[in-house]
Image 1 (cartoon, rainbow, N blue to C red):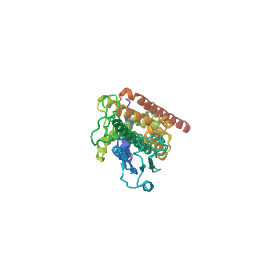
Image 2: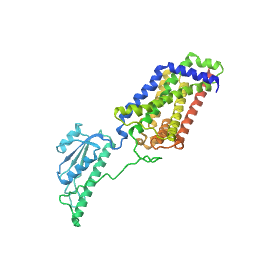
Image 3: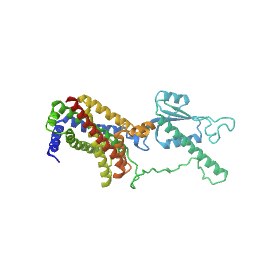
Image 4: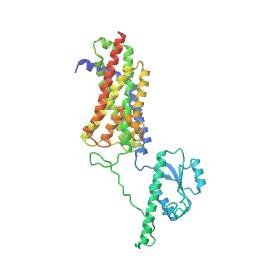
Length: 410
């Protein structure tokens, strides 16, 4: 290792420590960001979490079957049920006024025609009526509709079982009703490389995404220091001393890589110890040394990609303002496309294919492979290779831009 490179690392470390505002932005902003976004999206990734959408059931039938349907809907407990005593018009008014998001109206004769196919007796069965707020998410509308269909199917199955029992003379306990309390017969298990089948928490899903987003914002202090050095003639003096530009970039790479890794460590500690203080689950890192090594390998590759991207932006921009705008907008675009801001699984198919072009998507896939699927080093190798290739291309482009600028001035 050359003495010149050591001197460059020392110079960069001193310049970085003097930029206290940049350091604060690197550590304070991501801390607040991870805390706010993790708490805001907590229920979006929690299976079985209560949905903040209200509904009421308007029972115009008042039969045993409509009561069974009401009981089954109450058991689901996903949507927020509100007691509402009224008729169809009152329910419509409540939805229009925003007091209800949904209202399910059970028509008269529902119980009598529960098992009668519509139109079999010449009188078509009157359907259930679902009144809904047009501003309600289509996904929630569909979820409630599916919940009602499941409850209706259960009521019909119970009624069929009860009538079949009576038809074939099966013994029926005195006072027994057709409504059965069936146990939950579905158990969810997470499929991982190891035997741990517990479902991941919302923090496990959210923190890696915002950690990556924060790490790429190293572009602001790097570009700021780089452009100040260029404006003050520091880079020109280094060049006059015979230092090649690639060595200058290498001198910046290690100090900012270390800072970026410290930043990642701080974000992990925020997820482990600060987020639980606000009522959310704690972030859990992989438990075995092999998985921890895979996690660090992904983290190191993300840091290299972020610092190399920052050096490329610093080489492109003429002023600090340009670097802040180009770097900031570039990060937001990579985050939006790469599934950081909007989860990739809710994007259209075309956008999901576009996400494969974002370095943040590669990084997120690597972290998810380790933290959610418990994959090892070989499993995250594709993500690491993609990030290292992006780093190399960014550094080569930065060197080429500098040579072109020198050729233009000479």
